[in-house]
Length: 304
Image 1: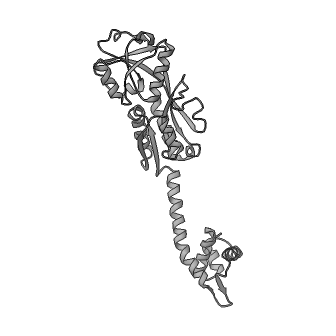
Image 2: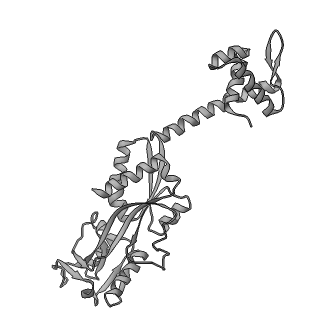
Image 3: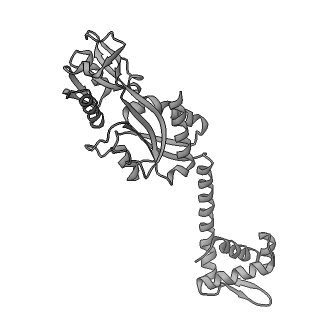
C-alpha cells in the first residue's frame, strides 16, 4: 500500500536531488528519509531511484509515481480541508424530514438559529409522517427525522410500538396535548373542558393513519366507537371541515400554533391525550457536527 507520507518524501527527494536536502525540507533526519524510501520501493515492488556517487535520479517508475503524487497529495489536501470545514461547521449538509405541524412550528425557528450560528451548513426539508419518516432515516434518505408517537398506544396498524426506535438516537423535544375542535355554534363550544364521552354521537374528522388510530383508541376507552365521516392529513382542511359544521376533531396543540381557526373553537379534552415529539437520528450520524447542531437547535426551539 502506498502511503501519503511516503509520496511526500519521494516528491521532496525528486525536487531537491538528495536525501539530506529532502530531510532538511521535510524537517526530519537523512536516515529517516532513506528508510521511508526503502519502504516505498518495497511497497511498489520496483526501484524508484538510481543512486550513484555523483547523483541521484528517478527511475521510469519513480517518474510516474512523482507525476501522480502531485495530484494525489493535492486531492488529499483538499479533502482534509473540506472535512475540517465540515467538522468545524463551516460547511456541511443535513437532510431533515418532518411531519407537517412540526415543519410549520419547530423547524423554522430551529433552522433560522442554525443558519445564524453556522451559515455554511445547508439543511433541506421534506414532509413525511411517521412511520414513513422513520423508514426514510433507516434507509439513508435523511439524516434527522422529526417524529411523534402517542403515549398509550401500540399502533399495530402502522407498526408503532414503544420499542420502534430502539436502534436510533432519540432526542425528546416536547409532549404535545391534543385539543378538541368544535364548530363555533356547537353546544359545547363555550365549555372550558369537554369529556371525550360527551362527543360520542358526533361526526368525526380524522387525521393521518397514526392519529386516526389514536382517535379510535381514545374514543373506545371512553365507551364508544367514533363515526369517522372524513379523513385528511391536512390540518387546515380539518379545521375548515369543522368550521363548516361537518364534524368535530382532535388536533395536536402544535398544529394549532400555525393555523388560525375560522368558525371553529378549541376546547380542552379529558382524559388528556398526548403525543411525544422527538427528533431521531442514527448513532453514527449523531456524531456528525452539523447533525448534532441541528438536534440542539430543534431542542431549543421546542423549549421556547
